[in-house]
Image (tube, rainbow, N blue to C red):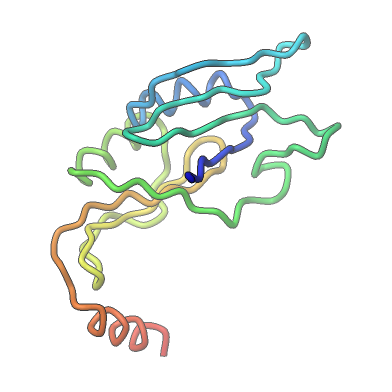
Length: 142
């Protein structure tokens, strides 16, 4: 079993190009509709798949700008967070949280892509015992 994110964007063809530039995505396939929209674009990002679709408002399929944002964050675990972050910014992503070393042992930052989707970029840099992570989280949210 596997979970594959299927995200909706305004401009799936542009989004596929952005994800190729920002995250090194490779396009696997696309399914156009007669009106020029894309029902599906399958991308490979690292060892995972990401599916994109244009908006289809008549079917209730809407992108973040049409629904006032997104509650979802897509996470990329990478070997070099600095390089991945810089590549995404150069491609047009906006920094929401700069990269920094976090109490759970990752170098971590958050971006928003030009289509309204949010991304965590993380590189594991040190192992932290679970009880220390729990204690640090409790202190942070106290």
